[in-house]
Image (tube, rainbow, N blue to C red; front, side, top):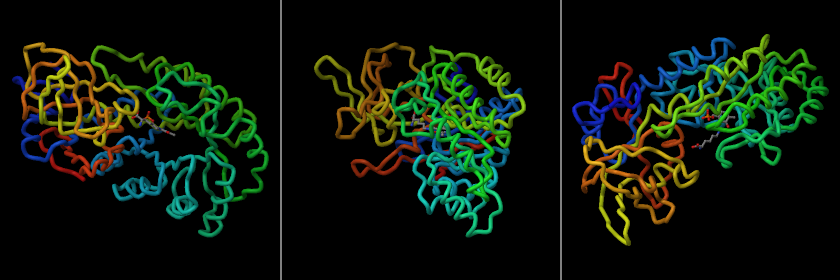
Length: 400
Ligand code: LLP
């Protein structure tokens, strides 16, 4: 059974590339995230290829997964990076990424972070507050930086078809600047002699269900760009979805690319995908600690909790649960829960699972994005470990 090019059952055991996940699990502490570098790079190249009609430059969104091996591999591949903190910029630089290839975004950048970004020569700053421009101008003067490239982030006032907690483009959201403010700032651009207002940035949400809102946001961005010829770059953000359920397939990306291409002729295009590059390259391995049959329910209490993987508790997110040892029996409906002292610590609700034994291991699939990067030490639990499988798919090592 093949799940994607990196994960499959071989001889009854779930493998990542050429390696049995049971082998990895038996040699490291549980729970642990495992990533296939090969799959990360394959996703990166696939997106790059798909977006060839717009010659898009990809800036991997580090917030999805800041693992240093992943960043290093993407930097070697020539990827740019989307960072939202001084910490993420540091991670990218330490992994060999070029400052010029970083876009620095964020609705609440501190002045220290802005200074750091300008000092380091970060390629683009995506601006969401007028005051940031004063800080950037001052930092450029202090450091003798001739020109800082800025993209103004538009709040296009469109509602994305996604979970409300990860939608960012509607009028009531804290993100971006309204079209009026952007026009005003562009009209006043001479007050910021060291800033080149060369781009408009949009990002209307993550795990986008369709492309309608994206295209309408894009049209609003182009309406502004059309009146200001110095704007040569449109950054269309991230948000490309992944298939979390094996029974659901995604709308073809080609349609979106074609629609974007017909609009963006003549512009440089930047893209900030996070999830689409790393989500299906990672799994979280956990071990069954207890099996509890109670009040008509079956609970598999595993050693990974909401502190290790927050998505189900925060967004009711669905992650497939697969036993590492393939089972022929279909089993019964069960709840996969963690050890954290909260009723929301449910990793998978009402799943039909084969009977699992204490000590048996399961994989929470498609957890390479926003898994480890959102983990916390809640309940004074140690952060989960990470294992990276090498690009040739044959070797692995602990990494973090
Ligand atoms: N660019 C900007 C400005 C963003 O805010 C984000 C994500 C991205 C790019 C990357 O989006 P992606 O391609 O990964 O969808 N924790 C949530 C997702 C939050 C996304 C925040 N911003 C989750 O686990 O679903």
